Length: 153
Image (cartoon, rainbow, N blue to C red; front, side, top):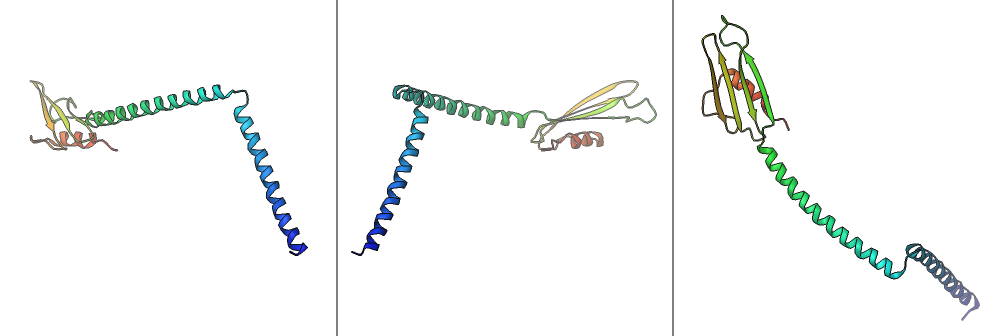
């Protein structure tokens, strides 16, 4: 073998050895920092405790996700849109004493309640609403109250 080739091989091995020593020293420092102030038994107990805590957190997270889904379903069915329209059905009498109130949930189900007021009497009507429609005829004021009560997502 030529001396130049031997020197090249020696140099490559020397570089590899220096890099290996550097890596070992760096790893040793990282391990010392990790284990500083802890005995092997303490570290094992800490890891086991952390595993238990993580398991507990995952269980709680699952419980909360289930509860959130339940609440979202309930929220869709709860009244979220509400609008009141006051009006005067009889122009020759009084002021805007009559009203229509629309109550709707996210699925456009609910009720419209209206009241017609006159000097002689007052009448109250309740009409169920399913999918934004009623099987009973709605007045313009009731339609307006429902339209304004629709939940905007």
